[in-house]
Structures are given as structure tokens and as C-alpha cells.
Length: 444
Image 1 (cartoon, rainbow, N blue to C red):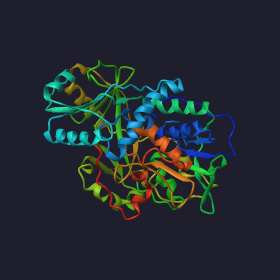
Image 2: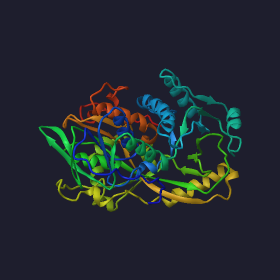
Image 3: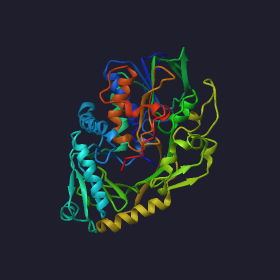
Image 4: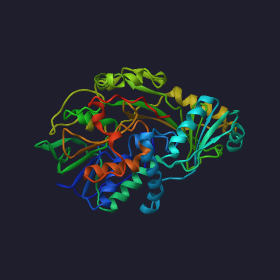
């Protein structure tokens, strides 16, 4: 596992019964468990691998509101507030800093789109700044490019993926959450159409509510119970540089088809936005019609398609199992796809070309990750009509880290049948089966 993530110890003992079981200890799962425990609810948090072992430690570390889909903006705005509160609340450093995010462009169409988006965002209370060419030069003086303009969101921020989920998990344990790693959920115990517990590799945990936040594995877990969750898993690549000077004038920046985040240790996380790999596998074939619109869009032109071992084994494979048998989730404890060497090389070259002061930096490490993606790039945070008591929190389409705290609150409210703090309708699972048209993706 090439990514670096803080270790978290398991809780003593193993619960036989709790109020809520949360499956998956990534950023969304730990946030859900923490919010539930704050309400006095008994919670078991289980993961087939380790806390933050998959995409929650492999993402870029951006915590942004700017350029969110309008449906996600309320979650993003709340999450920024929550990110700021969590460090002091937990007494731990999550690496969160409100250091601002900068987008640069050479194209008037981008400026027009950002201006239109900004006008709509102001109605929800978010404000960013469109920058002229001269303002861009002042904002990013070490860039070698002559930008037409840009957009600057000073209240946006960043956090450290290696620290965040573990810190929240430790905080959750302190207020009573029972955490168990290397403990796969094999399936649900269902009685009269309602959740009655979760079968794990260590036995049954009885519960009247379950939140499934299993990332790339969620759709396969749902299919085990005849629940369709249309999802595509896209393999991404990122890298950490060696130590380098601060050239951004921001916490994160999007320049020349490159995403950069200045890490708290003086290195950078780099990635090529929109580039990734889709494995040809049964899950993708099953839901191909749901993704037809996306695969015809400019998004698909940046993707590679591969036939590999995931066709027979992994989150997108087919095949069933009984809850007293070894499940697919135990066979791959941590999904660890290889990084794309070409993207690693391209990212480093682009960084040095754009910021000559970075000359001489190297690759400290590179890694792959699997991004669970929905047909409209909007997450599924939803009750399941077919199984009462089950809540899905998945398909975050690469945006789960930033909005994780807000998603955790919403998932906790749905699990407890409380009034949700944001309208949950855009995130409902049934939008993919009730005849609703699939919205064109508006994420940027």
C-alpha cells in the first residue's frame, strides 16, 4: 500500500448488538459514525481493511466549495464549516487549512462559466472572485504562463488525507463508537423487509439501522441483496513530490491541466484532472445504459478502458456468496490499483514547466485509487425503499473527501429518521429507477 495513512487501533471486544452499524471507515463512514455517536447512539464501525485505507487516503486533499455542482454546494458549504470545527473539537490536526483555491485559464469560455456559476452560488451564500489577467499575475507571480484570468475562492481549503479519517475515527472511539478493522461485512440480516443486523466475518451484529459507506465496493454489496446502485469505478493516479518551495500563493491550484496541493510537510500532491482508467467488467456492463450520456461527453475522452483481472475479482465482478462464506470483501482487504506511470511523468513535467522554481523536484511516491462514480456525478446519500433501515452513502465521484463531514451528518440523520439539514432529494437512489432523466454532469 503506497499511500501513507495514520494507524488506528481497534476497540476492545466485539459488539453483539448496537443501534447502527456503519460499513466502511473512509471519510464518509467515520464522519457518519462520529455524528451518530454525538447524538448518544450506539455505533459499530467496521471495515474490511483499515481506516482510510482506500480512496480516503488517496485523494487530492482538496476541500472546496468553488465549482461544485449546484446540488452539492449546500453540503460543501456546511462541510467547510465542519472541517474548521473538527480539529479543535477532536483535539487533533486533520491538516485542514483555509488556504484558498485558485483556478487559472487561457479561455474566455471558462471565465464566462465561472461567472455564471458564481452568480448562482451567491444566492446560496458562497462568494468567489473572478480575476483579470493582471490580478492573476499578482496572485500567482511564479507561474510561467500568461493567464487570461481565473477564479479565486479564499474561503476554500485543504486537508491531509493521511490524517483526516484516522483523526475522526479516533474521536469517534472516544465517544463510544466500537471500531473493528479487518472485519468485512458479508451481508445484511433482513427480517420482514427491514434491516435486523449485519453479518460480518466475525459474526452477526444486530442493529435496526445500517449505513453502507463502502466506496468502490458499495454497489457489489448492494447487488448481494438485489439492490441496484448504478456505479462506475474509475482508477485515478496521484503523486507526492519531494520537498519543494512554495510557488502557489494558495493552498491548491488548477493550472495547465494540473492539480496541485501544497502539503503541510512542504511537498506537493500532483494529479492530472479528469484522467483515469475504466476497467471493463460485469458491473459496468450492467449499468452501461445509465452511463451512456457520460460516456458520450468530453469526460469520457480523457479515460482509458482496460480488460484486466477486475472482470473476475474485485468490486465490479459478478458472482454471489452466502453470509456464512468468505466474501469478495475479504479477498481484497485494500484496493490498491497501480498508478499510471505516464500520468505520473506528465504531472511532474507540467509542474516544472509551469513553475520553474520547482526544477529538480522528484517523485517521493505515486499511487492509484478507485473513484466510485455515479451517472450524474452526484452522490447517493439515500434510504433504500426495498430494505427499510438501510442507508447508502456512496458514489461521491471523487468529491467525497471535501464533503465527507456534511455527507456524514446527512447519512446519520437519514439513519435515525430525523429531519435532514439539507434537501436529500437530489441524492436519492430512486432517481436512477423512477423514470427521472439523468442530469448532465455539472461538476467542474
